[in-house]
Each structure stands twice: as C-alpha cells, then as structure tokens.
Length: 252
Image (cartoon, helix red, strand yellow):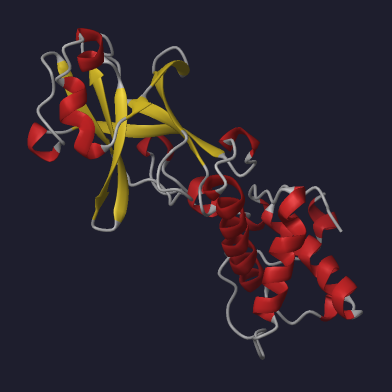
C-alpha cells in the first residue's frame, strides 16, 4: 500500500497501516514506540536507497531523499590544515560545524551564496578528492588553479567540508548552500544554519522524511521483520522530544 510520505509522522502512520494489513491487528494495538519505528524506517530507507541508486549507478536526480542546508558557515583556515598550499590569491575555508551524515559520505552539490541584500546563489564548487588537490591547483591551466572547489575531511569522526576559492573574486565568501542525501533528516533540521547554534526541534515528528513509492514496500517489510524480533518494546522514554502523537489528522 503506497502512500505519499512527506514527514516522519506520515511514515510511521503508513507503516502502522502496513502492519495492520500484514497481521490483521488494528494499528492502535502496535506496542512499538514511534521512535523505534522511525529508527528502523530511517535505517532501511537509507540502505535500500543507497543500494538502489548508488550501487546501481542510477542518477541522483531521481533520489527524493535529497535535502538542502541553505547556509553552512565557513571560516578561513591556515594552510597547515589544508591538503596543500593554495595558489596565490586563493584560500581554503572549512565548515564551522561538521556536516550531518550523508549516504555516500559527500554532498551532491556545494553552492556559493552571497550575503548582504539577501542570500543569493551565484556559483557552484567542483568536487576534488583531498589527495588530488595539489595536482589540480598546480595545473598549468591558470583557470584550474583558481577555480572554486570543495572536498571533505574526517576530523575526530566528524566530516567537515573544505572549500577553496579565489579570495579576490569571492571576497564576501562566508557561507555555502549544501545539498545531499543525508542519513537523518533530524540532523539536517537541527543543523546550526549560518552558525546560529544547534536548533531545538519543537515538532520533530513533523520534519520532512520521504520514502519513495517504489521502495516503500521493501523498507516496510525490512522494518516489520526487524521489529518482530523485539519484545516488550513499548517501555522507555520517547527520544523525539516526547512528540510521539501518532495521530496524523491532528496536525493535518
């Protein structure tokens, strides 16, 4: 039974209908807390999406789990922290905060935004592997040495974004927009946009969470099998800020 899922609450409710269809028991009798259902739905959605899209090399444009962080703050870093010495007039910048986890470990796109007079996208970075940076920016082609690039680096198990740009051309570079197939939408929703600090989620159950129709049955089946192994799972405190009301109509 495919449904148009757009939020965590809708995903949990859709799974309960699937559960009812499978067992004949009313969905109201499900003993599993919403946090546990969401945990498995998220895990198996990511697993199935990764296998179905990345491993089979299908286009990322068809992957509906992409989300965008509109403003990731940056700070200029010393060259000793960078993959190599920058070309004359250029600098490396690092994301102030580590990025949320992504299915394939890196963003789909990183876009320059200009601050002042409203944020506006005005260019995109090209990905370069950390270890290939030196060859790229020491290219005999001058345009390659000063072109805006981005790369990723793990620091204490956190994944930071590094960007490289001509500081004269991009003198107002303070932040970028980052789009990616993030593992957990709650990490994206609570991300400190523009460095304003970790955002407290008032209604996490209503945050965006998409499961594509073509993989819903498989994700629900895997979740059902996983939950079937749990006993007395109804105990414990809800981790979604106690916003565990399973009635979709209340917020419709």
